[in-house]
Image (cartoon, rainbow, N blue to C red; front, side, top):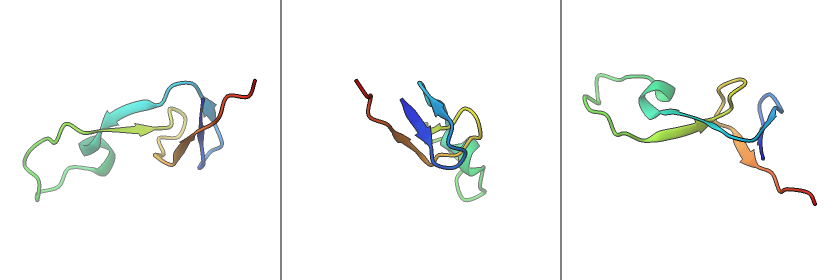
Length: 55
């Protein structure tokens, strides 16, 4: 389980988007790094953390 520190939403799978989409396209970078950023599917924040599963 994940939890978003921004909106407090709990979810099972983080949404992955490209770094270019998250940070925006810049004229300084004319190539795609291919990196993926995990974000909250509810609000789009990358301030998420893994919660321990309680038994």
